Amino acid sequence: KQSYPKSNMRNSDVLSLFCGDITLLECDAIVNAANDQMLGCFSPMHKCIDNCIHTFASPRLRDDMNKIMKLQKRREETGGAKITRAYNLPSKFVLHTVGPIYSEHNVEENNRLLSSCYSKCLDLASEVPECKSIAFCCISTGVFHFPNKKAAEIAIETTNDWIDAHKGRFERVVFNVFLQIPKE
Image (cartoon, rainbow, N blue to C red; front, side, top):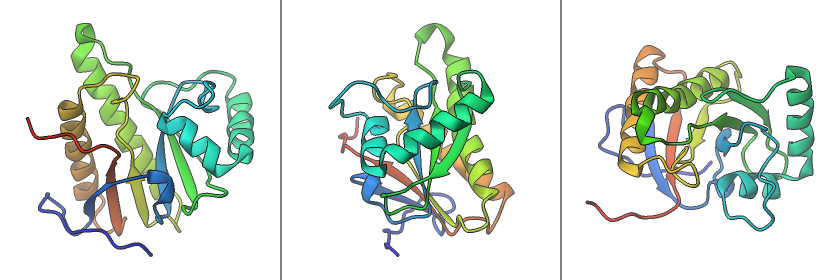
């Protein structure tokens, strides 16, 4: 298994930061910031995390999501999550969550929905006994335009609260950041 640097965050025995490509992480589950169709990005060569994960996992990932969505008979709700196998990725599972599209006119609802993405992914992963580690991408901060600093605060607070309520459930929770953004 991959080793992660220690952090000085609350629950630092469980939480880590990693800057790099989430599709290369060797953990039990990675999180995909998906659209509400849950079938991957349909823009060829688009560099979003949804496209990268679907590309490297294999078309079987999209087949799994297609079956799930046909059974569900509706688009995924913002803040919800689904789980699939990871196929060609080093992880075992992919958690797919739909983050909010940020709007300054609905900040509190955006914050609540983003928090739901993190808690629903943790809830869903915790139902899978062999899932001991999970890596989160930066949900909604790309094309959904959620402000990076606020998104990070919500991710850390929500995850810490979940870990406090479920001590010992996960061995490692990783916050994966793809870009290094200088401190403000």
